[in-house]
Amino acid sequence: MDNGRTSGQTSTMGRSSCQSTDFGWISDEYIRVRGGQNRVSAISALIDQHVCREGRVLDVGTGPGEIAAQLVTETRQLFGVDISADMVTLASKALGGLARRADAESLPFESRSFDGALAVWVLNHVGDAEAALCEMFRVLRPRGRLFYLSGIPMHPEWDVIGRQLNRLDVLRSSRVARERTMVWLAESVGFVPVRIGEMVVDFQQRPRGAIQRIHDRSYGHLRQVDGETWESVVAPVIGDLLRLPDPDRYRERQNRHKFAVLEKP
Image (cartoon, rainbow, N blue to C red; front, side):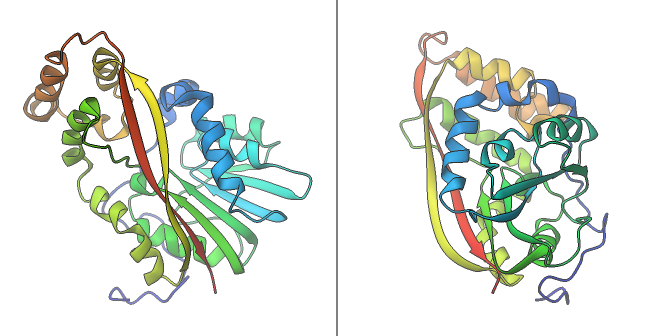
């Protein structure tokens, strides 16, 4: 690796020039504004096909712990970590106290202490995705698998609302580029890809509903946008959404999220 770190070497918290995103401000409404129970069920069902059936699984960036809680069985134990204290409070309730506050770049667990790990809609919010992947590699046992699900959706050409929202990706800075090469980054820290696929989510949305989500800063990459950037980048997108025919009519939409199953040799 070019930066001199060996595969699985523990990273130093705070080393990144980018800060990880804390979603504590929206913790009470996170499930609703991020797709509701349908999203939770769909993602949980996908993960269940690929995560170990027995042992300890770590959910990195667990949020309120709703997905991890769906994966708990008599033989599978879920632990959650999140950078937000508010999220950890909710996750602790969902996971029977098995949640801790921690940065993904510095996990507070011993090496080789988990049989599986999850990174669901989180690595695009981490300041240093490579450091986080190194930490997940470190805490996994040999043959342990990481399930990664991209938090940045792609939209088909016919999704007129999605095409407009895509224009806001410029506000993600370099994180969007890292997300699109995440499997390569995972390989560089030692993981071996087992399966790469795509999760397709079909839903309906009104242009005016998308606008409301923009104004509410429900999209994480809009949280810290300043006034000048809002006027130059965000306001034109809102204007074009309003100019779509009948902005109160629901349109068919589709999000495509890449996923990967990665194994530690």
